[in-house]
Image (cartoon, rainbow over all chains, first blue to last red; front, side, top):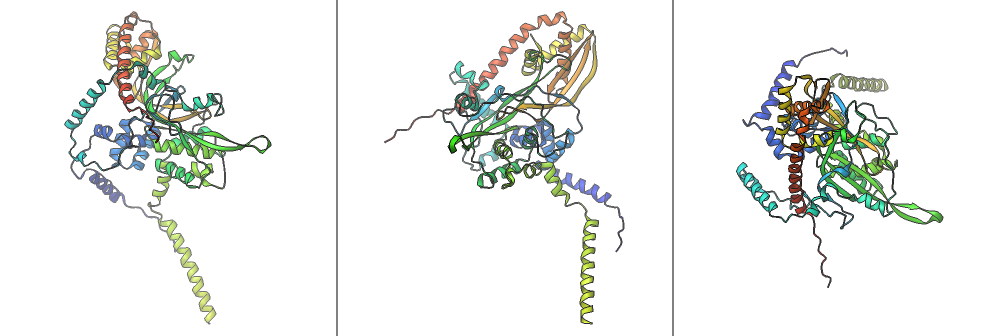
Length: 378
Length: 141
């Protein structure tokens, strides 16, 4: 059977795209972008993190266009990003400079600076709030006024005020106590996976960049598998912090003095340091427990993803072919949203020739079998 | 006042300050726009704390503008879509680069705005610190 090239479907595709718009708008109400920005912080943060592009307004447009579908929104933002010039690289961003809005430790109750819960769903009952059906702009304004009034009535304490912009790090405390090996700054320039294809064995900077832009669900699932036994770690959250990180750029022609840099704004990030106990053999076969650190950081408030990243970071630092979660090729090639959803969804596209070719093979092998059977009977 | 502190105040403070400064310069000097405000990306380089190495966290959308006043070039760059602010920041940067006399009178305005920013930050911190856990030791029978 020969193959015949065909074309067609242009009109059907045009109508399909109209139908897609119809499905988005058919209830006759436009969802305004500022309302997406105001009320969908979690989705916006997830989409920015997976897109690896920080801009709430663009994220809101992508979410609107994608009808709230994160994988499609991420695809749109990644495509948009590729049209923009990248003109600068920031000065080194350090989480020590974070303006903290939330900081907790699951390891140390009396962590220096205290446990600051900030905004979290951790202690909510997860009961569906039917009161939200009646929520209006006015009721929100009233609540905000009352909340601000309540805050103003709090006794002002200058000692506390400095805490949040200069909170001590748990790791620094452990290092100063000699409970964690100290290390010096490593200023080796990172590799950029968006400019150079990944090669194995990968560099640490490549692993962290792929993990931080990984699909939240995929990163979380693989880290969960590690803890369930498909890995060899037993981690605890040493410190989790959420806050605003300032970004500075050097003048393109100056000598790069910090005081002459440009401040361009802050962005929200989540940082997690996972503490992972490890039994090591010392002199004369004596065994001791030491801690290793798994590092997670992502744009926006994405705590589960940052914790999962910290777990996978440590897994990939300790290659072990017994577990797929410790295999960098397995983890790094399968957690990117655009790559994984793009490949899976491409299976919907026409594969007529491929499939017909397989049918031909099956028909030929069936014909040969029938001929052989007839020959046997004769 | 050096550029780091100046841009912190102009971006974190009220946008009217940057507008007023830029207007003052535009009225008295010829401002040549080299690059109109346009979107660009900044690659974010971060230091992780486990091994203290560097990696790229992602990209930040910015608006960037370049202007020239006399022989001095000024750059205005700010997070997000803020064309007017980027334009004003570029003019102010060029004014400082050219050491224009007007810039010497801006210091007290910037110092005052810095105090407002710190006050707002203190209020925010005060609100967040209401969520700080106060552990109480339970009685053991």
